[in-house]
Amino acid sequence: MSFSWEHRNLRADSGNGFPIDPSANTLASFAGIIADALRADFGTSPAKVKHIARLTGSNPRTVQNWLYARNGPSGAGLVVLMRHSDAVTSAVLTLADRQELQRGAVLEKAKADLRIAITSLLDCIGSD
Image (tube, rainbow, N blue to C red; front, side):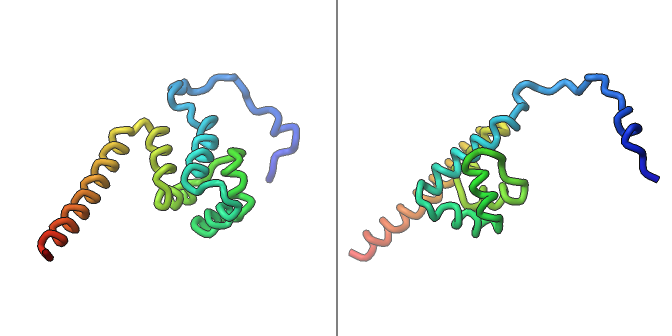
């Protein structure tokens, strides 16, 4: 049995809601920040929409909506974007107020790059 249209309008609307942490209001800025990060990482070429669509398995129209900040990617799409884009990963960590994780990731990448550079330098010195 379904309710009639009149019964559906009788829901109580007290106006009370849960108090929200002011810093948790990321919904408004989420789409804009992700759009900026996508533009920073994937550039301004017209092919970026198709490239991002192929990476995420999303519709190109959906990707355009992400780039124009009309809406943001879903959870699965966001994870794929974070896998392929350092700017998106950084933006998500900033929105989550986890800058220490971001700094740690940058430090680990710098250490790995330094190890590679030292190894190649030692190989060059050893071959002389």
